[in-house]
Length: 309
Image 1: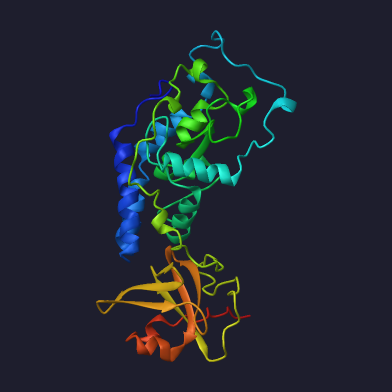
Image 2: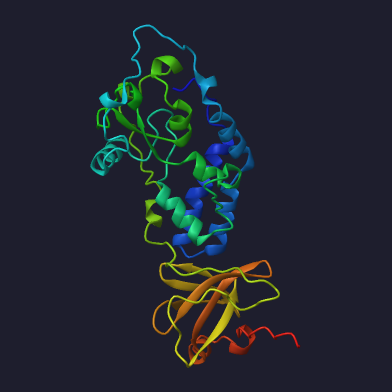
């Protein structure tokens, strides 16, 4: 139960369902569907519901000075482990699962969101400084660790005082106590078993750490060098809408058949955007293109012609 915010609307549950569908589609290598589902999960109604509820948190207070409530203590008396040890976080997650103990919403670790953003940067936007440029469903499902008794009131960073929380319940609760917010102690209810895995199945599907550089119409060569110097026999090929996943460049169907390249010697890759179309530049010997039944000349990345004097 949480009285200080509205209950999740149907669009929130639909956005979370779209996240699950997107993860499943990605693992099935259906990258177009995965991108579409991630975009569907970035629902403007969900974003408005969430961001209206977690701003101005003092409005969530019902009783400013409830009787027999805990009080703020000096910093010298607070648990020095404000950030919560990794061992405690692990134990809390094993106990609570990927579900908010306050409201029951499914939650997803920030690491998974970062993987999704790396795989589908356009479909999963995330600007840490601008909430308006953050993916709505990943905002809603952002896994948090909350001190039930506030740390500022002497609450310990222990298994007994920390619970899994969604971002809205954690940020909406802020520094206030349960009595101030007039909400029930989540520890009075046993964790509800769930088969939701927090989309952890995406872990390991992240893009390799390669450099990215948007390309303009005026300069069609990447300004940022690739991570490894290519062999002299290699050439550069640009594939629109190609994705990088789990160490592979995945090329959309050519002549009705999808192709892929494993990154490593002698294949190098770089995610780029050209003329508004995101794709990948692949550097490899021409014969590797030919072996895949692709017309190398059609995808050859030719240097931009330099203007005359």
